[in-house]
Image (cartoon, rainbow, N blue to C red; front, side, top):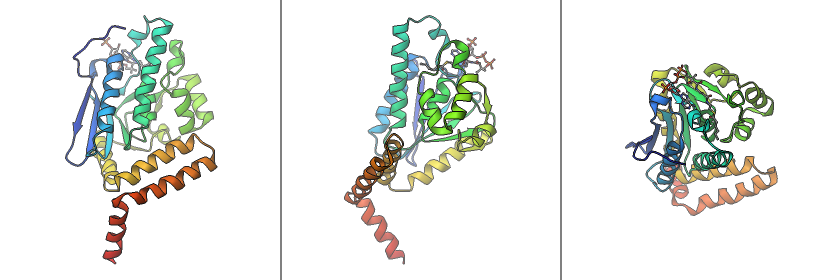
Length: 258
Ligand code: HXC
């Protein structure tokens, strides 16, 4: 699998307020994700995981037209089944790094989020869409099924019936419809998208990083488990928070204000 090196397809901006903005930067191809984009996204997640100054992450696309138009169709048109398997695996690894990053990730969906683009948004914790956003899993029209988590995460987020409808038809949904089915958390005008996403990230960042981190882990593990396993994990996660000075400081701050 040949790949062109040196292109910076993922731009990471670390802001002073503890928020990192990750931008998919392949505007001429509507931020379609080739192997290099996936590799750079993956390594950006590794860097951010190790950076305690970052409290929340926003992923968006460069330009005003697309979050990401998905996997690279030109590349997929010429690969073997084994290369396809590798492409799916690498995509899965990157999306799982997003999903399991030790801090919340917000998808600022600034236009088309199709196929793999929608799947990347699904791997994020929260999705905020601009009014011009268009989301879909159009893969079946290309003779493939969703391959970066769409058959799994979509159903967990919007329910099995809606996921089946969207995957079998490949139908595009606009931001309002996406909101109505819980596919996105909120919708704002495009010029407000970054401000709104940053505002949500700041709301998160003012809370205890360890408590947010444990909460994310518990929700992610819990939805994959039966309720008694999830609740047992919650007891451990909850009591783990008591090992961190944040808990004592924040509780005494509350009590002193009284
Ligand atoms: C490669 C893509 C691309 C993609 C767009 N481009 N999407 N290249 N892969 N997914 C390229 C076009 O070829 C074109 O390049 C440029 O970006 C601009 O796109 P246009 O089609 O000219 O723009 P427009 O007419 O505005 O249409 C926008 C669009 C359309 C509706 C988003 O581009 C489109 O339908 N794209 C494909 C979306 C899709 O089916 N995604 C799912 C892929 S499957 P040039 O060089 O001609 O200017 C998938 C599987 C995931 O994601 C799992 C993998 C394991």
